[in-house]
Length: 57
Length: 407
Image (tube, rainbow over the protein chains, first blue to last red):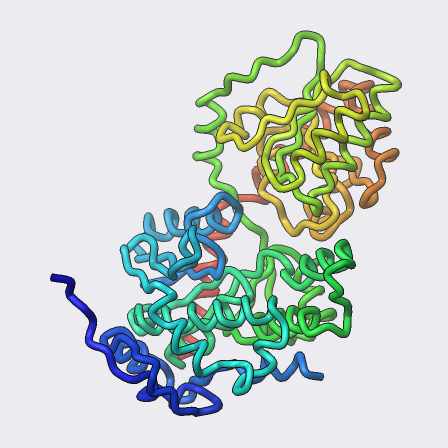
């Protein structure tokens, strides 16, 4: 039997997104995302605003 | 020390950055350090630390990235396909690095502007970030856009500004950025606005033992009797200017035929270049050898080396030619004039100047003593200047200073 990952809603990780929206339909692998989330610096955000806003000027 | 070498590009792959990383890894490990290499997988489906078997498939993070960074929430990311491609892949790299864990490393040493920006955003604050910038992605992309006006990308376009932005933010996000020469340093400082104090330059090194071992391994190429061998090892792409060499050879053939030319390498422009050579009546004079693993041995069989590129930084092919004592004829592009002293260790011609290159080839074919003198000088200078030990010593000194600075 396939060992399926334990999934949770991706909204749990909204903190890393500049614009936070609710997308309860997107399920993510808890093991993967929890490990990523635990390692990211507190101030980490996507998109990378300095790089992206430069191109608007 | 525990060191992470990271690149946005593919690992492993055929090319200079991978060879450079492997060379550093071998030498640092011989000195007792631990070195990991992280990069894109060859099929682009995951990021991995290739020597540890650690990987994160991109499809583990892409669904959430695309749902949260959609066209409404992140319009600038989606306003241009090129921007979206590079940015989303860079965010995958950032998340993969977090997944692998960067806190085990004493030093992070990146090899391009994308991985540099990526690592700067996810590394522990105390961990020094050293970047080696091997070329200008922005320059290469601008050249590509100019050559392909059908793409509709010009100075005001988002993609154009994006590469300027990532070049600046990549090279500025470091503890220290290293370039291989002053040309690259000045470019970063004056064209892209990177603070001068943040950039240092020192040359690449070449593993002399490995080079001479490959020379001794030999080659199946047999020099034709009574002909001198001109060699050009390069990727067959526009920026390498192989078409300039072929034009020069057509001019040379009008005055003398005591030579053959080996073009060693492969690339997108191969069919076009073969067609150019055929149309100029050079089928019997120019041989396209394709990708080869015996370049040092081929150099040992050669008499003149040519690198007629349009843009280059500090190509290993020129370093190897100098090691082998083959006089290099190079263009004045990029960092090449810092590698060759005109009239002493080789000859320099203006970029895309086929007549001058043809004249220089004829000069060396005509004057054997001068050709041999340039070769001897190139070998003496190159053996001293491209010492791998010296490069590693400098790198370790930079690591130590960065660690001391980080406390």
